[in-house]
Every structure is written in structure tokens, then in C-alpha cells.
Length: 162
Image 1 (cartoon, one colour):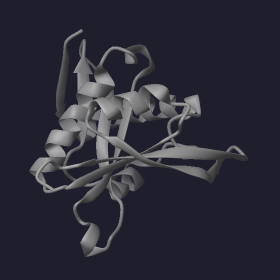
Image 2: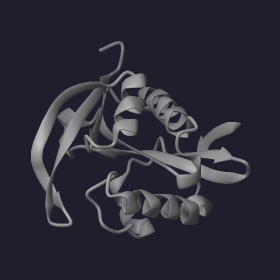
Image 3: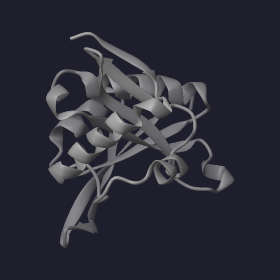
Image 4: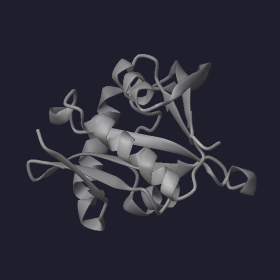
């Protein structure tokens, strides 16, 4: 499968939204329970480094960065989000998106990337590790999803120069 990573455009929102909805449905992707409006999604993510993966003329996945804090000291720290369409999972789309997101993050001055992943989502943990992330800890019973306490694995990647 040939995958091309390009900058996310407003016209991609419908497909991005559907892929996000598919991730929510798994119960293994996020604590969120509904897809936000485009305005809320936009406000939660950095304006730079918003990517989509194109395969066979369709969006196969997306990736974006969110600030971890409004404090100036954390201006170079961002959280990653990577979502892959059901029919494209296990085909390298997630890794391609994350690798390009890492490259883009360094271009815009991000020195630390972090990801919070449910431990049951072994594919996501593996993709992050393959892109240079390391496990820095397990956050036990950090939040509830559908009334059930969930743990997350905290992963981070530092820019090579730092």
C-alpha cells in the first residue's frame, strides 16, 4: 500500500471525524466519549503539524499535536494523537504518521513529545516505541471510561539535540 502524508485541510474534517469515531468505538484510544465539533478540536490542537495519511484516494489516518500546558516553560512540549481508519490498521499507516509527526514537531521547536496510551492498546505502544518513545511510567487508575477505572502508559520522546 502506498501512503502519502500531507497537511490536514478543513476539507478533510468529515473523514478525520469518522476515523476518530472509529477510535472512540474501540474503547482503547481515548478517554473522550464523543467526537468534538471542528471548533473544539481546532482549539485543542496546535495549528502546526496536523497531518493526514492518504491511501487509495482516501484518508487512512490522521495525527496532530496538543499543547500540554499554557505555561511558557512547557511551550516545547506537546502530546501526540494518532488515529488510523479500521480498514487500514496493521498496515504501517500509524507508524508513518507518527514518524512524520515527530519530524514536523522538531521543525516547529517541540523538544518533548508525550503520549498517554491505554496499556491494552499494544499496537499503539509498539508504534510509539518504534519511533523513539520510551516508557516513563504507568499512571494507575488515572481516569474512568464508561465508569471503569483505567490505567495509562506515559511515553515520551526527546528531541535528539536536547
